[in-house]
Image 1: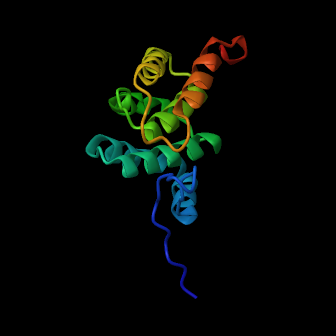
Image 2: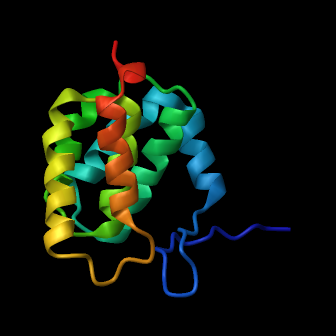
Length: 145
């Protein structure tokens, strides 16, 4: 039996979560730090919301798995600090929450203010929840080194 890969799908009005190809995600997670150059290249070369969100999702799982040096990708991650995509904002904020990159605090605050002034019109989950949580984690003594 051949298992067909699942195409990555963004959340929609009937589903407030992403659909991922678990085999693809697990492959990158298993490759650990060796997959980081590929992730960096993808983020540098694309602005496609779907592809960026999928890559951020994979990076998030890699952080959960203990992959080191993902914080070194901040220069390429910061390319998306001004995005208006609620999907990208949500995953980016989750990554920043986990990595506690000092330079990411200001962009998180900016995202929250931007979304308060101009709420995302097509958000199937609330990016402000993740952004606010990330900001709070920066302010929480428990996360300080």
